[in-house]
Image 1 (cartoon, rainbow, N blue to C red):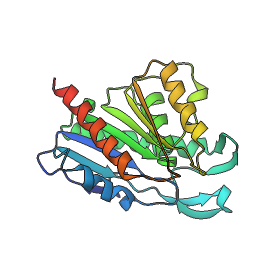
Image 2: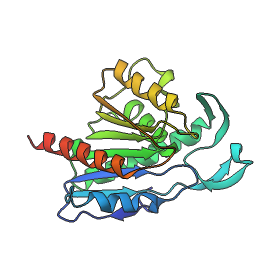
Image 3: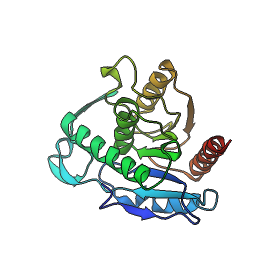
Image 4: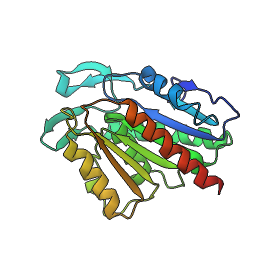
Length: 221
């Protein structure tokens, strides 16, 4: 994952990192403008923007596109997915976290972010697979495909859950369901919804910057 990632290096010596996964059919450069917008407020943060492999997606007629895993079918509030491909993407993400840790970044200052399908990989990894500390998780316009498989998570990093009220791709209720499950597990969560569709807005970016800044300040204190 790191080999093909776009890296937006910190403006000052990096002591924190955000690993940000894009959505289905998108690319690693999608969130580069967002990373650069956040840099003045977060000058010590390195942004790593991985690229999903190109593979067939069943719901799109088997057409190959950047995808973290195959989506087999869609019904209201539910996705049937290729679990093996999800696990493969999760393990790649874990290796990326480990690489940053081994490069000297405290895991408590490593954050995972994901939009749509990328967010599903992030939620699965952060709460069901990664067993060490993390700075936090940002789940944007996404859902949790595997939370129902367990009664308790393996870790409880704080989360920022964000969703568009008019999202026609990942309905609002799916994002709310993931957030509510984190709440039930005792995770420190923040929920924010916006008058938008399946997208990212300037107001949301400001909220992301403020949340990350606050979390990083907490780790210093």
